Length: 427
Image (cartoon, rainbow, N blue to C red; front, side, top):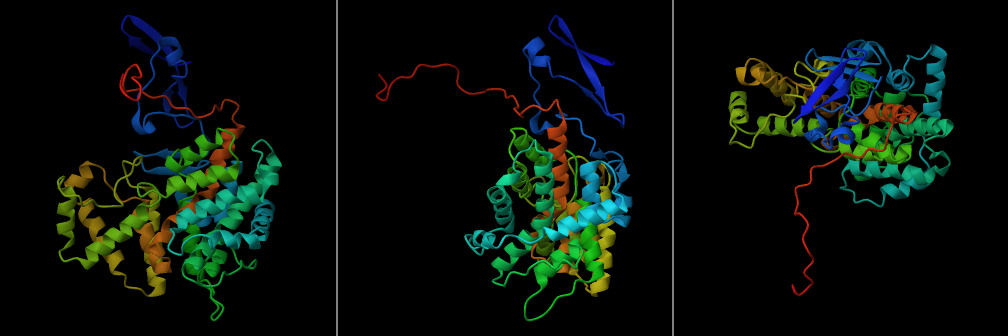
């Protein structure tokens, strides 16, 4: 076993080294405080591995993303989203009979209980759909009290099915409520992505048939978002679940974590930025120079990533999908033109290149969603739909790990030291 030595003053302690299957190494500090009285200080946990995971591998320096060993490029090109959902949870790709059974189960559970409509109608019509979705998912725990035990495999299985199947119905219904249109019920003859598109855009007066190109593009986007290792929302799902919270409550916490503009809301911010750039006078170079000025509050959204120090492999796939969708629709989108021109300038600018600020997954995804007809504030909801299997896989892996402990980070206290209570009158 490899070991590391840490010297504090005149004392040296030995710490074991853990090595992952891809050669990643970590110093195990589990007993550091017990042996030395010290903890580590790591804002944002950027240098801390809390868990061992076999789900997703990322090499940020090389721009690599793999689910269970399969390159994201191969899955995005060839797989079905539900096939990837099975892969993330089980560790292996499904056989054809397994996929057919799983797809049938997801399809048959797509219908949401009729009385859940009242939950939608309790919100203001202007409520953000991510807040509605999180509330609906949390409420599922009260509608399905028979399947809350995190240690009951059958309860977890049926909860998983309900979440993946019903999230598209709840998302579509939240949109319909906001735009004052009738709810559209799921059609079991459609595939997963097409079913969602139909519930979103069909109205009683005019039937909507999802275009296969749009459905396939949405399928690809869901796959690209399906998991991304120990990010903010996945870590939130794990830490909430570590307290034995049920799957619905844990996933609802992940939705809330994803809703922030620094996480899942980034693609919405990209579209808002591009819209501002198109509508305001000045060439692209003007905006680039503003982004480089540290005294200017303007920032380029969609560039750079916490993990990737190379091209985000998902961004390269999405860029092609965006062009295919716009070509099929016959659209000449000024936002896409602006995005492509901006990308070209930034990739030739030493300021951004030296800082490894390459386009990320959010840079083009919002442009595609906009072309498909989704309103801007639904973009993060689409992210949540895609991420659902990953959250569930992370939650399951944590519960199956016998070494899991309830999440409880330490802190460095910087407040007042002990002082006496003087009484309300100060005497």
